[in-house]
Image (cartoon, rainbow, N blue to C red; front, side, top):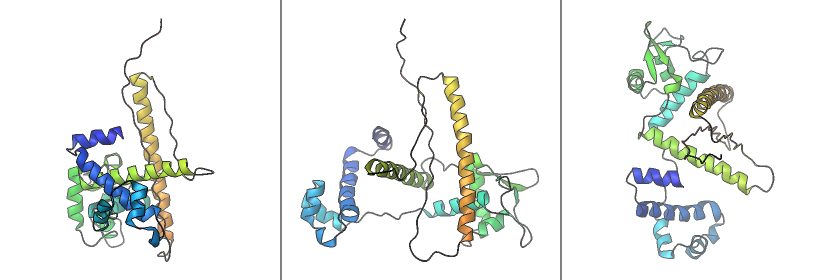
Length: 260
């Protein structure tokens, strides 16, 4: 919890605000996830499970938390990028995104056609201008739009970054929690490779290796996922979402005493 507390303090979120949020979340989880029988969802039972006073529980029942808030820009941007990295004719056989002319004849790949294959509600020029300002794309000497794969990181503090921060943190904790709680084989992949007491130059070399390998894996996974999704008819019935996440972290260690 230490990194979250540091983030909260750095953004002006005080303990009382965070405590109110967590208290409401305890009630919400008890009602939605733990007490599956409607008859068991009494204020007394929720109070017993959470330790929260029944008066607060009654208040919380009238102010349900929003579980589905996804900024529109997140959905649009991720869909366009995913298609550019995973679907023909916008990607080469080697998996690299094609440099696209801004517009082209019908049936020919272009940036306008790429955007319009995802949405008709936003002008391709508006998307292009926004992405140029974020360094997600650049215009080359032949007036083609080139995707900067490594630069596709939401700008700090924007809705996109905050959304992915919350979703990825949730999914990582959910996977780890499911593995810890499992009676048998762990249901999800959650592994890491870690080394301590490395020279700074060696650590930087490993960081660069990790970044390159992670990008290759994500691009390949996205291409296969896009092909799989395009090959299926519209889904009728239950669906499932999949989130493959990768993290890389490094920090300076405190000085260590050297034994003689």
